[in-house]
Amino acid sequence: MRYAVYAPNFNDYGAPSRLVELACAAEEAGWDGFFVWDHLAFEPDGRLPVADATVVLAAVAQATTRLRFGAMITPVARRRPWKLFKELATLDHLSAGRVTLGVGLGEPPELEFAAFGEPSSARERAARLDEGLAILDPLMRGEAVSHHGECYEVETRLAPAALQRPRIPVWVAATLPARAGVRRAARWDGIFPLQVPATLESAVDTSIDWRDWWLDADALARLVDEIGALRGDLDGFDVIASGYGQAPATPAAMAAAGATWWLEWMDTTPGSFAAALAHVRRGPPR
Image (cartoon, rainbow, N blue to C red; front, top):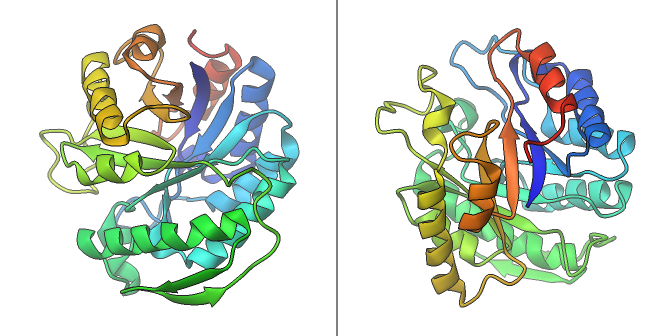
């Protein structure tokens, strides 16, 4: 089991220097990774300070030497895949091969997509995600791309390729109980599972406790069995458990259920940064 800090890019963390400070503290305290949320907006009134995830990660790449890092998750549907590739390849070279690409549909669609006149339905976002990955995969490997799809027409080759071989690892977010994300993740290198709280009324419902999104060890074990059946084996595949401290289960219990990474969520409420920094400095919850 490896351990990572998982920090939002808004509220207290909307100040980019704080995220870099948190990453440096994580490396010093023995954490293995540092992942940030990737949002443009997270509440309807638009007053919430939000930092750009890619720029923050470039600073993290320079300020650390050991941490694996990335955005969890990158909404591929609102990015040009070829521009996203350039950002990822640059980060990979800048960090000597420490980037992980986390991907998903992107939420909340009304704030991240519809507000800018972009396609926001789940079907449209899923189509752009899958085509985006089909373009990113060969680009990261240094291969030519000839892609003719519903969303993109691409004939190109870009250099340099990603530093990691055969390419940058891809972890896919899956929001249960839906299975589309699970099937998508089985085709790539890892799964970052969450579950929709039963009381959730909208994607911008801020009254939901984040703990309601986390899977317990039994649910994770069932998911690992499902992924194994879809793939045939779990060789080289990462299963990402998430929570805080010992909840929803101890990291040891999650490891026994099949998790390979633990992502420790940071408090998203305003005024929480000092406590989060102190928590990170105490080291991972082994």
